[in-house]
Each structure stands twice: as structure tokens, then as C-alpha cells.
Amino acid sequence: MTIRVLIADDEAPARSRMRRLLDELPDCEVIGEAANGGEALQMSLAESPDVILLDIRMPDMDGIEAARHLAALDDGPAIIFTTAYDNYAIEAFDTHAIGYLLKPVRREKLERALGFAARLARPQVDALVSDTGRPAARNNICARRGAELRLIPLDDIWFFQADQKYITVRHTHGEDLIDEPLKELATEFADRFIRIHRSALIALNRVERMEKTADGQYEVWLRDCGEPLPVSRRHVTAVKACVKKRI
Image (tube, rainbow, N blue to C red):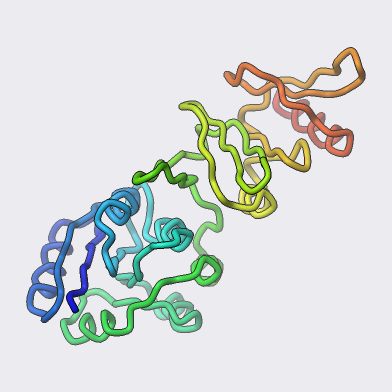
């Protein structure tokens, strides 16, 4: 059975070397190359590789953030990290049973890693983030639109709003639906978003003003959003403090 492999590394020489090693292995097919995590996500959805060889240190979106998005996909590929990390970080990979290859990658170790490659669960990757000391929060939200993935930078997001099973992400280019618990988003992005209601989080850097309506309710306005959002009585004090700090 042929293993279809995607190579993700920001350095062209490293990708070329990995391709040469894979070409020497039986039953391996390189189906593409990506230069960063965002490209790896898009190619993963378009090409459906069995395995991604994922470099950790890449610009725009690094390998661990890409892995967090990939682990959330129902049909995501197996992931093998390629890394030059020190021994302390390598212990985290071992502890959480996550496949990795140390650079420079050797053929025999690559072949062995491919034989044990497995899909990663989101909790595994989240634990790896914590134990390697990397930033806990993502810089993008990943939304699936049919056969495409849309990466939404956090800086472009106005608010998250829960609506039954899904979360609506309203941003500068429209809105998308994601399947992530609002509670987890609130925890992960606590330094960038604030809860205004049990079903809504707003971006701190977008807060413009808060007003009291004629019927005694409060609502908050976000810069460039064009519509106010209701603030529950439970969260009025915290939102007031946020607005005061921003003005």
C-alpha cells in the first residue's frame, strides 16, 4: 500500500533532501510540498495525504499551530514533526507519544517513523504546546468551507457568537462557522477577547464604546463592525472597565 506524503518545511533545500529520502523508500509517494503551516493545511485538504512531515519552525504559521488545526479535522492526516529542538522539548514529544524526526533526518529513522505514523488528537497537541513552552494561543482560526479551509487571523475577528452547535466568527471579510466550544475559545484567547454574554466573546482591540439603551439594557459597539452587541448584566462591570481602559 502506497503512503502518500506531504512535505512541509520553509527551507527549499530541506524539502529537496526529504523528497530524495522518500524517493528511495518503497511504497512512498510525495504528493506535494508546502513552505508554511497555512499551505500545509490547504494542501492537506486538497490532496488528502496519509502523512505530513511537518517542520516546527516556519514563518506565518508554524508546525505546531498547523498541527492543532489538522488534529481538529475528521479526516486529517497522520503527523510526523521534523525538528532541531533540544533534549528538553524532545522529552515532551516522547511523553505524549507524538512522532518526530531530528534534523538532519536519516533514511532509516524516516522509514521507521512512517511505519508508526498516527493521527494526533487535539489534546495531544495542546499538551505538547504546554510542555514545549510554546505560545498556548493560536494566531488564526480555521474554518472549513466545503473543500476549502479559510484561515482567519485573530486580528481580523470582531466577535465569536454561539448558536446551538456551531460558533459564528464575524470578521472583517464576512463570517464563518466553526465547531469549537465557546468556553475553550474564551480560555485560549483570554488576553485578546472578553465575554459579554454567555454566548458571545468580543475582541478587546475592537471595543469602541458601551451604551445604555432606553429599556435599561447595555450594548457594546465594536470599531468598524456597524452593529451593537448586547451585554448581559453579569458582564457589564467587566466590559465597562475594558471600555474605560480603551478610551
